[in-house]
Amino acid sequence: MKILYTATVLSHICQFHLPHMKMLREQGWEVHAAAHDNLAVKNGLQLKNCDRFMEIPFDRSPKSPNNLKAYRKLKKLLAEEHYDVILCNTPMGGIVTRLAAKKTRKQGTRVVYMAHGFHFFKGASKTGWLVYYPIEKHMAKYCDLLITVNEEDYALAKERFGSRTEIAHIHGVGVDEERYRPATVEEQRVMREAEGLGADDFVILCTGELNENKNQKTLVAAAAKLADRIPNLKVLLAGNGSAEQALWDQIAASGLRDTVKLLGYRTDLERVVPAVDLVVSCSFREGMPLNIIEAMLCKKPVVASHNRGHDELVEDGVTGVLLEPADADGFADAILLLSRGTEERMLMGEAGRKKAQDYKVSSVSNEIRELILKEGSAK
Image (cartoon, rainbow, N blue to C red; front, side, top):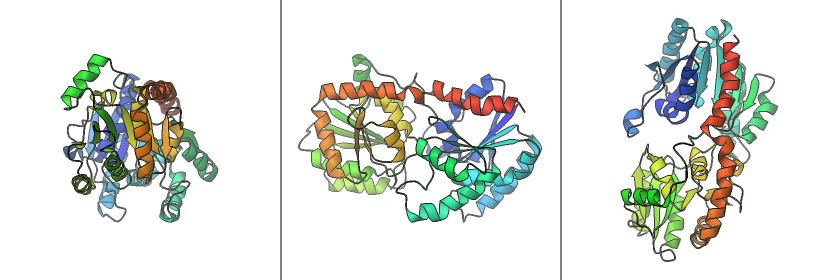
C-alpha cells in the first residue's frame, strides 16, 4: 500500500504529520510527501518517516501561476505512482491536489482532505464566508473523506458538505506525550538555565508564527501593563514570521527589552514548555492548537483567547482562563492573578493534563488508523 501526503509547504507536513507517517510505515505502507520545500527558514525542522519527497511549487496565493505548475507536476506524479491513498492538507495544497487527482480517483485512489481549521466559522469575517466557504463547498465533492480537527468545523461540515462527501472528526493531529510531559524540579532548573532564566522568574511562553492572526502584540501590550507589578516577569515568544519587526518595535517602545525575548523558530520546545509557569495565546483563529495541548500535557495552565480551537480545549476557570483576543487589560489581570496563585496554577495544570489525553499522538493515531489505514487496506 502506498500513500501520498501533500501540503502547500513542507513545514506543515513536518510539524503535524510525522507521527502518523511513522505509524503507517510501521504498518507496511510506503509513504511519500509532496510540497514546496521551505525548511531552509525553519531552523532545523526535518522531514522524517518518508520514503520519497517531491518538490511541488505550491503557492499560498491563489493568484500565483506556480499553482498551475504545481497542478501539472502533481498530475504527472499521480499518473506514474498509482497511490492507494492521497492525504492532502492546507487550503491551496488541498485544492490543487484534489483537482489533480480527479482522474486517479476514478481509477480507485482514495482522496482524503484534512481541514486544519476552516476560514469560515462563527464570528469569521465576511471574506471568510463569501470567498472560502463556496470554494470548500465546491471542492468537497472531489474527495472521498473530509477530516475536521475540531467539533465546530465537524458540525458545520456535516451540515453543509455531508451530501457531497463523508465527514469525520479527529482530536487534532496529536501531540507526542513522550516529548511533552511534566518535568522534575531539577529538570526545570536545567531548562531555565539553558534559556537564561532564573529560578524566581515568572515565565510566560507564547508559541506560534509571528503574524497578525497569532496576535502576539496583545500579549506584549499586557506585559507592558505588568512590568512593574510582576518585577521578575519574563515573556518568551517562540516562532518567526512577517510580524517580527513590528513586535521588536513594540517591545522597544514599551521598554520591554529585558522582559520579552524572541526565541525564533524552535524545534525543541519540549525543553522549554515544562520549565515555564504559564502558556498564553491571543490568536484570533485556531483550528486545533498544538501549543495549547503541549502546555496541558506538561501540566501548565493556559490563558487564551476565545476561538473554536481554544474553546474546545480550555475550560474557563478549570484548566485556564478565556478572554477576547484584543483584551490586553483582561490578559494582564489574568496573568497577574495566576502569578500570585501557585496552588491555582497547579490545580489548573492537573485538570489540563487530564483533558489533553484524547489529543495525544497515541490516541489520534488510532483515529487515523481507523479512517485511513483500514479503509485503505480494504480496497
